[in-house]
Length: 347
Image (cartoon, rainbow, N blue to C red):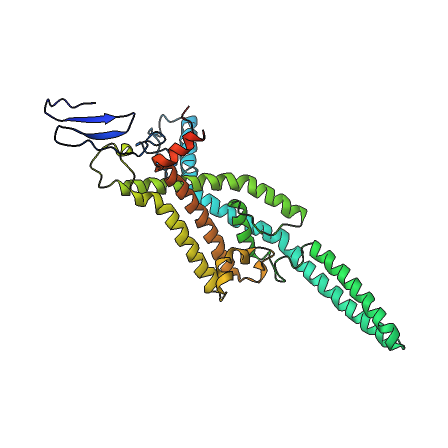
C-alpha cells in the first residue's frame, strides 16, 4: 500500500511479513517480528460491563401492544442478567445460597455424628470401668478386658471416620464459613482436598449447584479476563502513534506482566495465610494445604476461610486475565512453535 503524495518516500505495509517502514534512499527499512496472524486490532466481543437501561424503540401508552411491552421487558432483563455486573451479582448470590444449602444439609449431620461418637466413647469408658471393678483377678483378666474394649473402640472410631467424622482435623467443617469455601471451590472447580458431602440430599445439592454455577462462573471469569486484557493493551498502546496497533510489536512488559501478577498474588497469599497466621516458612509457602480436609481446614477460623474463598476467586480471575493477555500478545516465537508442531490453525 503506497501513499499518493508523489514524493521520494512511500509508506509500505507488507502484510506477508508484517513489515513497516519508510522506503527511502537514505533511511533503512524497519521490520517488526511480532506476528499478527492470530491477533486482531479489533476489540474482541465480550459482555457489557454495565447493562443498557433502555430499549431501542420507544413505547407510548396509546399504541404499545402487550407483546411489544413484554419484548422490551425481556430485553431489559436479559441485558441486566448477561452483563458482567449482573453475572457477578448472580454468581455471588448463587454461592451464598449454595453455602446455606450445604450448611443446612451437612451441618446437622456433622454435629449429630460428633455427639454420637462422644456418647459412645463415654459409654465404653463407663462399661470398661464397671467390668474392671467387678473383676477380681487383676493381673490375668484386666489386660484381656482392656484389649477387648480397645478393639471395640477402634472399630467404632474407624466406622465414624469412614462416615466423615474428623475429616477436617477434629473440628467442624460444615459451618457456614466452611460451606462458603466449599461453594467457591465447586464454582472454581478447584476441588483439591475439599470435603465431600455425606448425606444424599447434600450430594444432590452439590450436583445441582455445580451444574448451574460452574457455567455461569466460567462465563463471568472469561469476560472479566478479556475486559482486563483489553484495558491493559489499550494502556500499552496509548502512546503508539498509529491507528493499526496490531502490526506493531507488543511491549516486552506486556508479555511478562501476567506472570509477575501471578507471582505477586501467590506471595500475598504466603504472607496473609502463612506468616500472619504464625506458620513457619515451609508451611507458609504451602498454605493451600491448610485449607484441605486432610490439612485441618476444620481448625481454621471462619473469617480466614471466607478470606481464602475470596482469594481463590481472585486467583481464578487472574488466571483468566493472564491467559487472555498471553493469547492477545503472543509473539512470533510462540506462534512459530505452534505452527511447527501443528498446534495452531486459522481454518
